[in-house]
Image 1 (cartoon, rainbow, N blue to C red):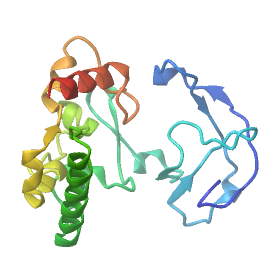
Image 2: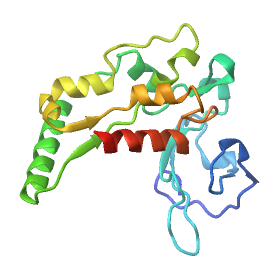
Image 3: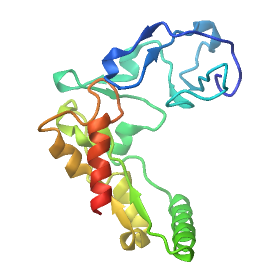
Image 4: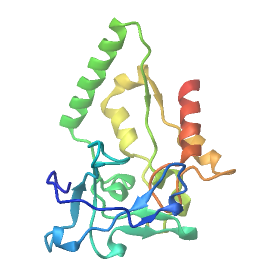
Length: 207
């Protein structure tokens, strides 16, 4: 499914062993005729025909620019990062993407509702905020990339001071320290790998 429209069926072309995941990962090739000539971003949902279930990481909005240099940023030691993605990660990193007052109010409402929900049931409430790979591996970014101290997480705390009374686990230090023995994020992907997920889980449990 592309942009919510069913386009047909395809089969995996080759395994993605470079992702170093325990479960099977595959590459798919789609004909370029599916997209408009000027289309840069599309929403993909790949489903298993027999069950209708979406595969892992679907649906996903991602760049389809044919020029890889427009969407892939090659960092130091050949670490790869996203460029011009739909979440504007590099602009978030530089503090150029700001949460609006409306977004701040929406988050306050969400927090209030969740606190009320768990308090009524006598349950604990905790948040795990996953740091971007760009912050965990900031030293691997090209030298011209700006890393601001006022990222999206810091803005969220500013708009929602109520969050300070809730357990908020932001395991940036743990994920950075864990790199001394093993990568916590994939070198060629933006997602954490099993070791990074485990370190974050352990940090959440401690908090």
